[in-house]
Length: 300
Image 1 (cartoon, rainbow, N blue to C red):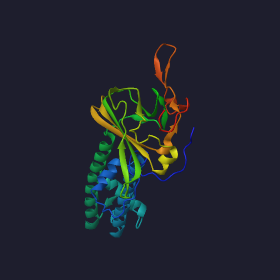
Image 2 (image 1 turned 135 degrees about the horizontal axis):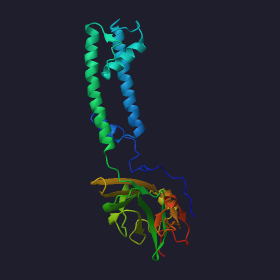
Image 3 (image 1 turned 45 degrees about the horizontal axis):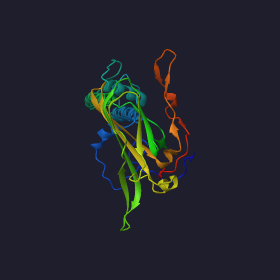
Image 4 (image 1 turned 45 degrees about the vertical axis):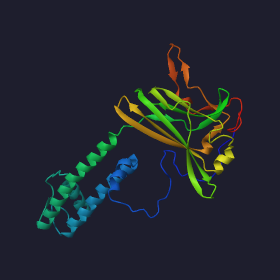
């Protein structure tokens, strides 16, 4: 078996997003909403907490700047001013502390309005994030090349991690690599891989996606070293109608050339239980075994 080796950095992450630094791009404030919707859970939570604490600290400094503007608060106490800000922003109103003077009441008016607006925006963002349907599809962490019906075949495996069916499931696999034109121009070219089956009326359990490596395949005659030198990556896009969400769902992943294991096949994930039922063993989902060796992408 050929093990993964070191090669040039890839420009597509494992989740299918581009891993490219954007230089000279103008950032727009409107993209903040997109970031808040698509950011990871920890990043989103950190942004909310930082905004909440930052606003309360800012208003606390404003109350301190107004002098003794908070009744029953210690003079010059940032802690008292901060917790008074928290009570005001959340419209709690315990009655222990209250604003004194026009300046403090103006700040209270602004902060109370900002608190109501902030709660509405944060609630909308969390609702939008939690109600986004996800495919619930698992991809194998490797691809394999093995003999299938007398021909070398590239394979990857998917599994539906939910009990709901995904109707009209579709999958698209694209190969990316560096090429040089006859004029000497270097470019990143995409090649769609022809699959033996690119759609399924119902996807409920697992799906092994196959690409026969023939003369028309961009993998034909290629060695692992050649694929790595060309910066080869495989982009996989899945789509279908989820019966549980009653919506279209999408997901994607990306593989590097070093993720291809030659002369191997996926281990069987189905087995019979003592009571006669069939089980799908997810602990074996990424396991591979080594059958009879095949040539690297070449003819048999």
